[in-house]
Image 1 (tube, protein in one colour):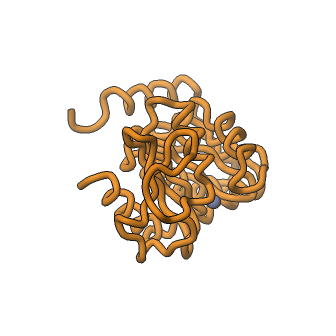
Image 2: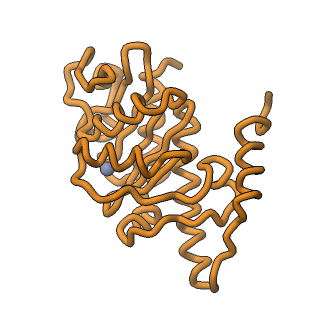
Image 3: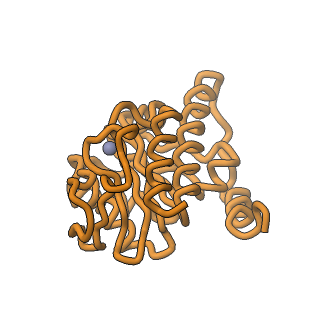
Length: 210
Ligand SMILES: [Zn+2]
């Protein structure tokens, strides 16, 4: 499957897994010319190969006739800043967004989240959607992690490939839900920095089929 086909497939997954409603959210994959990104305001069911837009890392269109996602600056800034990151998935999932509007970080309380995302999930300072300021705030909040919340907006996940960036968004959403439920049961226990480090290291270097 090529990168454009993958982008279409994961857009549909994002919708089917309820990480976004309607045509909101966006996703991209790094390619040699820069990155490919979902088009602005189109339903995921309607996107075909020719609707995908290719941009260079300065945010200029190099291929495609559609308007790119209005959050393209967020994507280009991430690719410029983190050279080991090859995919960005931006969702508006419910529990993560609840933390984002409360401007509260998701604490490091569950093992799969700290493995795949690296620890607590911070909230990027508020800026209007689609702005370079929002992109800069995200770069600050996501440092050392694979995800951050966008105040009053949603979630951004990043990964070495789209499978990982997508999984980050799924696991962070699940963790936000657990954090919320756990709070109602009492105070959740926070994992120690040392245990987080061990699990993160294991995930990055030894986890899965080698
Ligand atoms: Zn958004």
